Length: 393
Image (tube, rainbow, N blue to C red; front, top):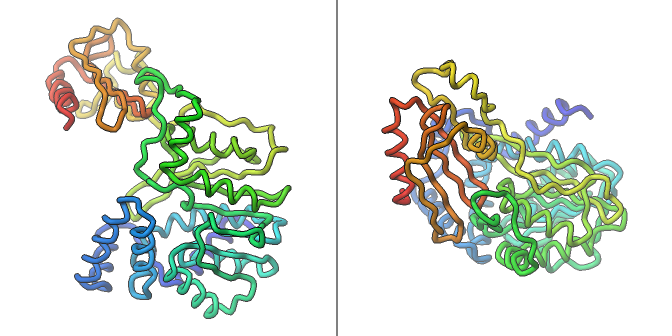
């Protein structure tokens, strides 16, 4: 089936669930206020704040609340484009699999889509939110589906009876979404230690260790696993990849970076991994920064002053900023500071001048890089920015 045809079916399926696609925050929040009462919104915000603390009970309470019939379409409409991005990719890869396990299925929006498109497949959705599973079962009956069932389980409680040819885990494995990951050796490099203790600590904090162990045991010998987590940041992606590789899971396809909108907000997500056991060794794991879409660094263009007068001569917030900084000619540093932040990251910021202009460079050991270059006459702007960073603002 073509991608356009899949997307058309997905739009229809999401509309059946009551979800709407919005192009502006204003339109979305206006609809949200029309549908939900102030008391409901206040409760949701409170539950969301509690969920961010990372406890299992708080997470379940939040998702139980979002499964309520009035709340579900409003809250999940924010993720409309996420469902398009993930649903189409997964459906395109179901292939010959006969038994499918969807881990962390939530209320079953995508699980029921797969069941509708592949009536001859057997699909099981599991989630630890009782209200979400109840809602998924109700919608399954309404759709008349007989090839899908839902069970209220933590994925670490899955038994051998749940073994599958294809296991799906999208936004289901990595707890502690704010976990910074494993820092690099210093702000100067993207390389990081491979010590077992660092990796073990990451797997414990994020909860992925026991989950991957369980799912790996349930995956059929020649089965596939589709995984997409919020691990775009290199300091999270590398230990996540190492956790997969340590369980003999290898890449069947090149990982794909995912980009979609949460209404107006652009989200860089993934990577989207398609994995198999052991035998798939033709594609190697990559621990380099992702190719970014920053403006290419062209010293000739900067020197000739072709930049817009109201814009910096050059600005990048991507990993490529490090390469551009290294290419600056005759760098002279006015001020610099390097310190350790409260979360353990090493931060470096400097302001200086090169042949290309006055520059500010900021880097930390969690792979964030920023370089801004302006004309010497605008030096004061960068000095103010330097002092804000120096003060931790």
